[in-house]
Length: 471
Ligand code: ADP
Ligand code: ASP
Ligand code: MG
Image (cartoon, rainbow, N blue to C red; front, side, top):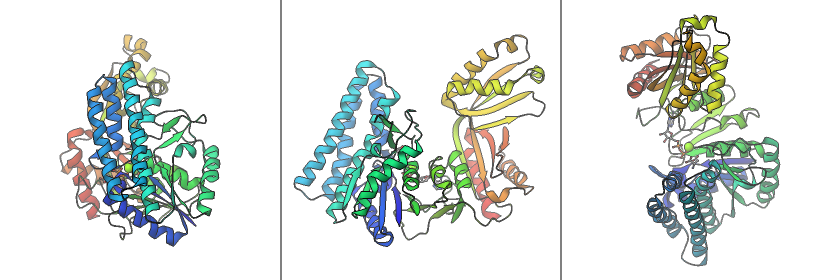
C-alpha cells in the first residue's frame, strides 16, 4: 500500500522542521510499506524561498541587480544553515552545498539576463520560481539517507507532464500517469523513498512549468492519482481544515471530515490551506485526502472524502478573499440587447482575468461580476470597446469597477435544500453592520457568497464564525 505525503513550506522550513518531517516519513513508511514524499520550497513564515526567488526576478526586471545580489546570501544562508545542522561535515555536505550554489548561480544568471533585456517571460518566471523546490528536496533526501532511510530526490519535471500554460499549467493525465509510474515504481520496489519537488512539471519537450502558487498540494494529488495511492496526506502547520482562517479567528475549530466539493469551494474562495485544484485528481477515484499538522502529528486532522453524513442546515466554514473589484454593466436598454452576458464574459475571457462570482438582476438591467483587482482596468477597457455602440445609443449607461471589495463565503453541503440559511447569513452580517453589495449562490448549493467592502472582511468573518459555532 502506498501513501503519498506532501510537506508544505513550513514543514521543511528549517533543520528542526526537516527533522520532524523525517520522523513522520519514517513512521508512516514503516506502517504503510511504501511512501512517496512531495515537498515545497523551504518557507519559514513569513520568509518563503519561492517569494524571494520571484521577488529577485521582479527586481531584475527593473534593472535592480543590487536587490538580486542582496537576495543571494539570504537564499544561501537559509539552505546552508539547514545543511550544516543536518549533514555532518565531510564530502556529502560539501557536494550538497555545491549543488545549492549551482542553483543559485543559475538564478543569478537568469536575473542578469532579465535585467539586460528588461523583459521576463512566464517561462523564465517558472524556471526561477521552481528552484526553491529543487533545492529543498535535495537537502531532505540527503538527510533521509544520512538517517539510514534510502531516499532519492526527483524533479517532478521527470514525472508531471503539463501543457505550456506557464505559471498555471495543467497536467496531461495519460502522459503524467505513464511517466510517474515508470520512474517511481522501480524505486518503491527497492524500498527507496522518492522525494519529489512540488509545484513544478514540464511540457512534453521538457521545459519547466509551474502549477500556480501554492501548487505543491496539487502536485501531491496528481502523483497520488498517478500511482493509485491508497491515500494522500497534506502535512502543514495547522491541525487541518478549520472553520475559518485561524489568523483571523484564533479559536477556529478543526473540521474532522469534509467532502471534496466543500473543500474545493473553500479553497476557491480563499482558504489558503489547500490549493483549489488539489481535489480534482483524487476526486474521481475517491482517494481520500488528509490534512495533518507536522508540528502536532497526533492530531487526527481533517479527512476529505466523496460523501459524509450531513447535519441539515449546517454551515461548516466561512472564508474570505480580498483585493477584488466588482465590475457592473448597467443600463435600462440592456433588456433589448441581444446576448449581453455572453459578450461581456467573452470579453473578460480575452483578458485572461478569472471571474470569481457573477450576479445578474432578473430585470436584465445589470450584470455584475467580481474579478481580481489587478485585472480590473484591463477588463473595463475591454468591455468599453466591446459595447461602444450600445454605450453610444445609451442602451448601456455605464460600465464601472467598484474597487476594494471582497467576497465572504459560507460553505457546507448540509445547506442544500434547507430554507433559511442565507437568511441567517445575512442577519449575522446585518447585526455586524456590514453592507452586502451583491449575493450569489453556487449551483451545487454547497456555498453562498456575498460581496462586501474590503475593510469589513475581518469583522464579517468573526461575526459569521460566531454564528457557525452557535448553530
Ligand atoms: P503550506 O506551506 O503547508 O502549504 P499554507 O500556508 O499554504 O501552508 O497553508 C496553511 C495556512 O492556511 C495555515 O497556516 C492558515 O493560516 C491558513 N488558512 C487559511 N484558511 C484556513 C482554514 N480554513 N483552515 C486552516 N488553515 C487556513
Ligand atoms: N513553493 C510554492 C509556492 O510558494 C508552492 C507551494 O508552496 O505549494 O507557491
Ligand atoms: Mg500551501
